[in-house]
Image (cartoon, rainbow, N blue to C red; front, side, top):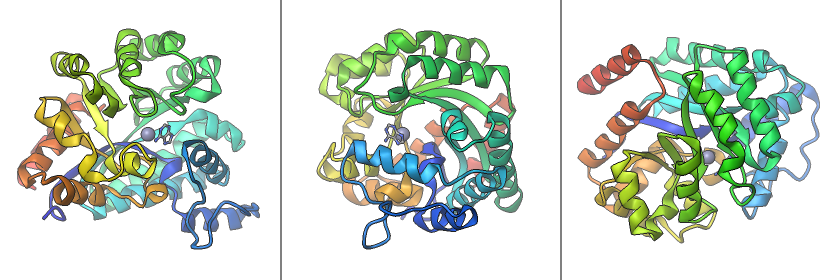
Length: 326
Ligand code: ADE
Ligand code: ZN
């Protein structure tokens, strides 16, 4: 039902998109020891949010050269296109680049080459959102924002914060979001995933975002749901990720339909696909099968993603035209 539907993904971490197979291949280039990273079936080994973040950092550290990152972006964007996506945004992280011994510029250039190669081959359009990592602390987040503003790149069009939402308060990141916003970058933040509704409210109060990564726990507070509708906030929903990380027992329990029915603008993404057994096509399929989302409802999610994408007006119009002919 959804295989031929045009899709768009706003929420995927590029380091979290690396499959075990690609991690093994790149690790072999550099002789990196991977012991303990995989389980007996060859999947990433993790059992809760903290161990997921640790596995994620270890796998990310395998990518060390611009070519490694080019291969990662190329693999991800071509696989997205193969599932019917016409547009994708990936979260990137200058902190992970530095941990791998790469400058921000070399990291971004490597990724951009992969995005351009994928576009040349499949037509998919891609952009990057620079992120700070919440559990690395406010000082590092400010440096991440300064880095992206001081070294602009045409394909880096947004700024955000990912990582462990149980740490720090959004007001601690307000300066980082202010300088990124003043530089014309689109703004999004992870909130309402491992924090409750108050975390979403604090993010809206302090960070000037137009989108929220996850935001699902807003469903616990009707006034906040009304505020999301009033302020036209777009949620980057990742149902498979939320189920895999234990927020909800299964797809039917996920608040996607309830948020949508309340009038919140929702989109569909895969977050860190190989960790969660997910992909953009799987997410659309789960919502169709597990929540009875119609083809028209899922097409509307794609249109919302294009409307909320961090792209210039001309690119947005090109994407809308492509939807019309899809
Ligand atoms: N970084 C990668 N995946 C994440 C998630 N689901 N939540 C917060 N930070 C992340
Ligand atoms: Zn995420």
